[in-house]
Length: 393
Image 1 (cartoon, rainbow, N blue to C red):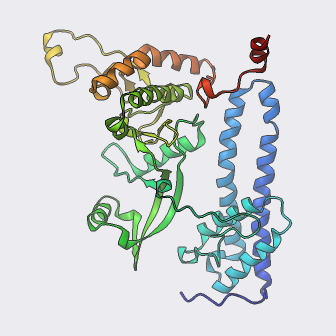
Image 2: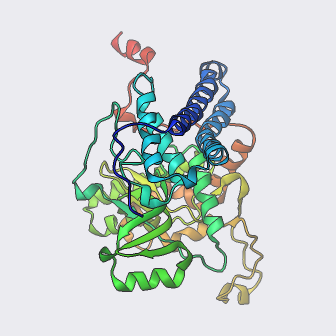
Image 3: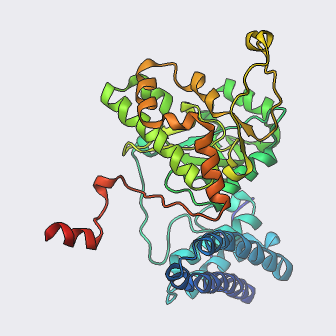
């Protein structure tokens, strides 16, 4: 495609109509979002924690719904996917003009990008057609620190896993309270990378396991769907290189992370150290969501006693295991092979190996109890005013 010269005049009235329709979509989103948030004070005062959780999920869904609505309108009324390059440029410029006195220009720019990238081919993904660099009132920040680079995950579906199932797990996390213990995940489509940055062996592996998600376009390799998370040190690697005091802190944090997830009705599924990461602030965060489940959907059991000697000596499981059955005591062989790690874990979090710990939390959640989860350790929290006054007196 040859891109038209940048327009020197806004001559096409359809471009203004497009811009107005786009801004109508954003204004509707923002109005509904504010209306949904307005009742938060009343819910808090009434201690309606379940209502707060429902409202949060609804607010998260609002954006995607409004983007889809706007994209459908632009397609049906203006055939936006067939616009010429010149008209597409005028569309953006008119939109910029409409934002001059708008109260939320940055959010409106993001909304514009979300809608247009659903409609236009990725060859239009540059600053002539979308907001690659903020235009109205935001500051462009370029990060050169390699430590801030994202980590890319590639999942190869096994016989018990599908791409749709993986996506449903990530959607669960997106809509759930992450309680500061699940990594924020950014979902992207049609991400183009320089082909030269990929080792030939890696490309061959990607083509073997997920060919439908790849597209080679000249010097670029396009990944049609990707989840991107900030880079962390995998906990298993951290523990291998850590000093004794760091091991203590990390293992305690690992257990705290799991207990915070339990309080939020989340069972990590695969609790191996490698599925948790250590942030630059030393906090342990869970980031591998393909086996995640709600605590309330799981059945926590103790391993039955052997019926006879053959059971005890058998290398196979002799008892029935349902698809959602979990046996916490079996975590130990996979987690506690290192004696130093085992010592710290058993002193602070040995209850994680007991089915009753998990079942009691499940029962309380099913009974309607909402657990408090605090984002900071006690030493970093503000004191309650009443306590501070009591201490002062």
